Image 1 (cartoon, rainbow, N blue to C red):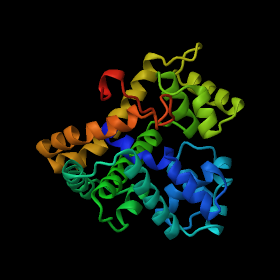
Image 2: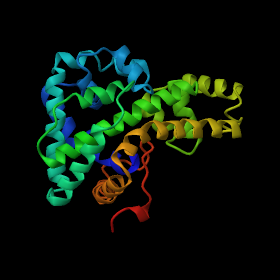
Image 3: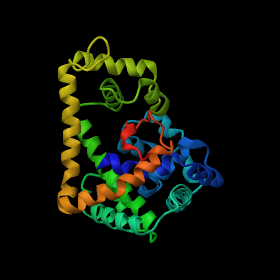
Image 4: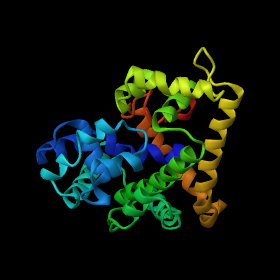
Length: 281
């Protein structure tokens, strides 16, 4: 379900309305906007906490955004700002917000309300916010809770597997995910730090000399993804197969339209990929 829900949540990261709104508040640059908006439900937190819970960003990258962002706008202001930006973006991109979106939002909310929150700080912080009224915003809030619940579980899986933040990036890149260039541009690991992560992975028998995953490395990546899926499955099991399948069917064309629009770059650090035959024609 992550693949079909993530594009709708990702509107907040890639739609120009978010950057325009945070620029108007005085925030400096896209990354300050990103860290402040995503961290806002947690309150006026500092860089150490955000580095820990977001996990795969270089600490210095977070420290350039926080806590300075809170001098321009409070977390409460940014929670409201990001929601308004999503409202503006969805109305521009997907003007049809009738019955299909209402039913999709209803099902997504049901899923979000049973999503596991224990040990999931970002998801729990978002779940504590008030629900919006408009169906297209209910859908966005629900997809946010669901993806953060899954993401927090993914961090637990990475920690259990003994993969550091940089090593997490290295291994998913070696598995055919986003390129090193994409991760270095978006996560700010230096060449030396990337090389150090690779060397440690090689010493553990996870990475071959040519930079590809060994059999042991592939097994560890599968373990991470399987654990992530299992931790997320708890909520979907409570929702039930019929409702989950209906949500998948209803949200797929909405997310497909977002992916077809080019809003989300093809090579993105979220490793979110849709094949051409999955997109609406």
